[in-house]
Amino acid sequence: MKRKNDTWLMALTALSAVLVLLALYLALAGAPEANLQSETGRYAQRIIYFHIATAWVGFLAFFVTFVGGVGYLRSQKRGWDIVALSSAEIGTVFMLGVLVSGSIWAKPAWGVWWVWDERLTISLIQFLVYVGYLMLRASVDDPVRRARFAAVYGIVAFISVPINFVAIRLWRSQHPLMFGSEGGGLGPGMMFAFFFCLIAFTIWYVTLMAHRIRLERLRDDAEHLKQRIMG
Amino acid sequence: MGYLVAAYAVLWAISFGLVFSMVLRQRKIQAELQTLRAMIEDEPRSERK
Figure 1 (tube, rainbow over the protein chains, first blue to last red):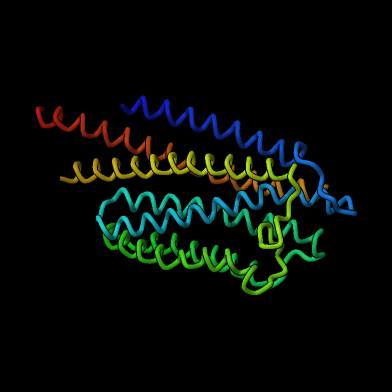
Figure 2: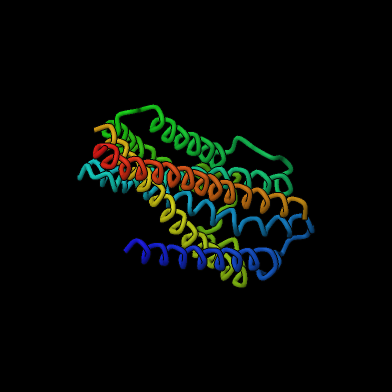
C-alpha cells in the first residue's frame, strides 16, 4: 500500500513539474505581448502570470487551513490538524512570493518598490498573521492544546482572505483589478496562459500538500516509536 | 527585462527553498525513524541476554 502511494506521489510530482515548466514557457514567451508603450512595461506585464497564480495558491491554502481548523474542532482528529498545518506553511511561503514578485512588478509599473496601498498593506498583514500561526504552533508543547489553539487561530485568520480579495473593489486601491464589472485586464490570447498558470499552480499546491502531509505522518510515526521505547 | 528575470528568479528561489527544506526535514525524520526501529528490534535481544 505504501509503495502504491509512493508511486502515485512520484507521478503527481512529475506531472506538476511538467505543468509548471509549461506555465513558465507560456508566461515568458507563449503569451502575447501586452499592448503597452514601454518595453520595460511589456516585460513587467509577464510577471503577473506567476504573481496571480501564486496569490491564488496562497488564498486556496489559507482556505484549506480554515477547513482543516473547522474539521479538527468538530472531530478532534489529528488528520485535520496535519492538513491545516501543511496548508498554512505552504500558503505563507506562497504569500511571501506574492509580496516580493508584486514589489518587483511595482518598480517599473509605479516607479516605487512599495506603496502603503490598501491591497498591499492587507497582503503584508495577512502574511504576518500566518507567520504568527506558525509561531503559535511552535510555542505550544502539548499537541492537543496546540491543535486546538491553531484551529481557532486558522479560522479567525481566514477573515483576511475575503478582505484582501475585496480590498481593490472597496477602497479603489492603486493595485490593478484583473476581473471586474468593467471587464478583464487581459486580452483573449493572454487568458489561456493565465488560466493554464492557475491550473498548473493548483496541481503544484496539491503535490506540495501531499509531500508535506507525508512528512508530518513520518514525524508522528517517530513520536509513537519514541513513546514506545520510553515505555 | 531585468525586473522580469528578478521576479521569476525570486519565485523559483522561494519554491526551491520550500522543497529543499521539506526534503531536508524528511531525510532527518527518516534517519531518526531508522534509529528508533533499530533500537526496538535490539530490545528483545538484549532482554534475552
